[in-house]
Image (cartoon, rainbow, N blue to C red):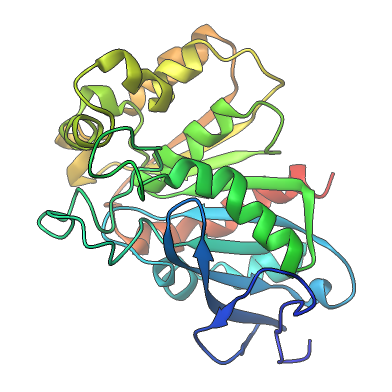
Length: 295
């Protein structure tokens, strides 16, 4: 693949290049910044274009990262490029929240505000103007990609880690048929019932817990009525956040079982919540998505 890695400059959306193109397993990695009308700020995303993207449109896998992460964490730490190149899949890793919006308190906590958008559309002041990550991920970013890169918008899927696993699951459940597959590493499965989710939802969505249900994967699974959705989840047995009841995968598995939603849940001995865990099993997840994206 040529190393220009340039998006289509004939389109209306302006992209600011943040790094030189880097060759990776025959493909190209780039990082971009673009203005977001949805979030009222500039947003960053990283993209890996496999060799196949040089000559044809390719399916896209959105990777949603976890608390405190940026668009760089997955692309630089997970080792996903070889499998993505093999299967001809574009990988897009957006940032995890708006940044630099000058909102009072946005940088006071590592698990709320900057780096912790939780993939919801906030309804509460002062967050509701900028913190609309759900719409950004499901609507605005796909449009931007389709206008600037060789993306096949009919073949999309989702994966993520921790808070990003929560994001991947809710986006899939809330948009039946839009995504071909979904997977997650150590996802926050039932945020209404854990401290992380309760803090985020209280701040972004307010005290009415009935509004929280629209962003809880366990609740959404219990009412899912869309086409078949094959879910792969890996969870480290030694994950400190699993033992602290922040992730609650059993609740999601029970809800999926009641609705006959297929879930492959793998509890991996000796693994924690880190990117070493993601790196160890990412090839399995890429293959899972390729089975549906390339069908």
